[in-house]
Amino acid sequence: MDTDSSTPTESGLSCARCGKPAYLQCPKCVELKLPQEGSTFCTQDCFKISWSSHKLVHPKSKLANVRSAHSEQSLDGWLYCLKNGQARTSKLPHFGWTGALRPCPISKRRLVPDGVEKPDWSIDGIPKTELNSDLQNIVEIKTPEQIELMRETCRIAREVLDAAACIIRPGITTDEIDEVVHQATIAAGGYPSPLNYHFFPKSCCTSVNEVICHGIPDARKLKDGDIVNVDVTVYYKGVHGDLNETFFVGEVDEASQQLVRCTYECLEKAISIVKPGVRYREVGEVISRHATMSGFSVVKSYCGHGIGELFHCTPNIPHYGRNKAVGIMKAGQTFTIEPMINAGVWRDRLWPDGWTAVTADGKRSAQFEHTLLVTETGVEVLTARVPSSPDVFPWLKLNHP
Ligand SMILES: [Zn+2]
Ligand SMILES: [Zn+2]
Image (cartoon, rainbow, N blue to C red; front, side, top):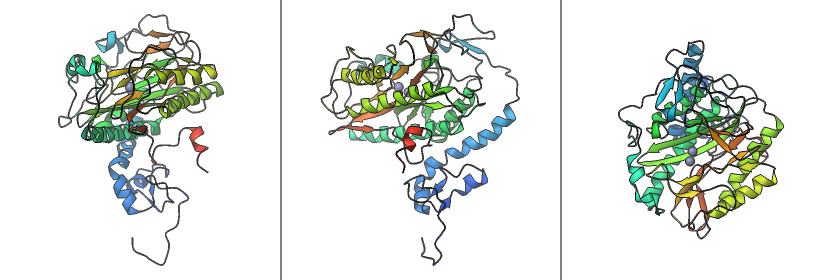
């Protein structure tokens, strides 16, 4: 930058990349009337370096306009999902619903452009390599080259989740979240891993209130006071990166805020013990101790998993105490930890769509997930928050003086 005598005025905001005081705002963001937060930078250099990830916030605002044009549109061609995504019906199925939430119709399948490298389930719904791989029995030690690819893909997955987080508010549908995830993923050159995985019909999972995990994005509008988990997995350069967060919709009651915060802490505490030599079964002990202490319970049916060239592989990492997981952590291994914590009982039920896991008592459930790398000295959180990640968790704001 040239040293003009007049100093540019500080906006009071910080650089979306490095956190230093910001002096300029992305012109595209100005044109699209996007919020200043996340669109300001300290220097042209930081702006240029951030561009490939920062630009992901732009298509979603174009989508915002498309969406408002769409919002009065009828649900022609939208149907309820049945049987693991392999069937559709026009009527709400019969089921002993455990809480107030009901499935809503889902939109038609979203397309992925020809140029994007796709996993082997994209056409017929069957992950053939994954089902037949040796990596279901042995935990792979990744090479430095594989690790570098994982870093890149996980960083994209993080940015995709952040783009979704930015649109969450009362009145938007979970299908609109799916559209943002889908568009941001393909804009980055990736494939949304959940799409058609074992016939899953959408590009991410959206789990509202009593949904524990694997909720299918649908026509339901988020309501003030809801909580919603968005689980994003991106396939890029031959590897997967997987993360999720639970967000507040408008003003959320105190009990739900505590549940979500406790779940966040459970993941943090679990990550803090990760290093070579630690037993995989220890993860569940740490999580279960913190959840129980806060009066919550831990889901047993769904676990963390190995990840890399495969979306799900060994190790299997339970989040509950006294589990029987085998093996110890070694440098170069990559896996997820993704505790699901319930306000009431730990037991789950499955909706007739074959995917949506809900709490047996209809009380709320929250989840957070990261993809992790075991290093020589500890752990690297491959899907960690970045300076541009939206400031949506009140307990993190306390750390900013
Ligand atoms: Zn996962
Ligand atoms: Zn996930």
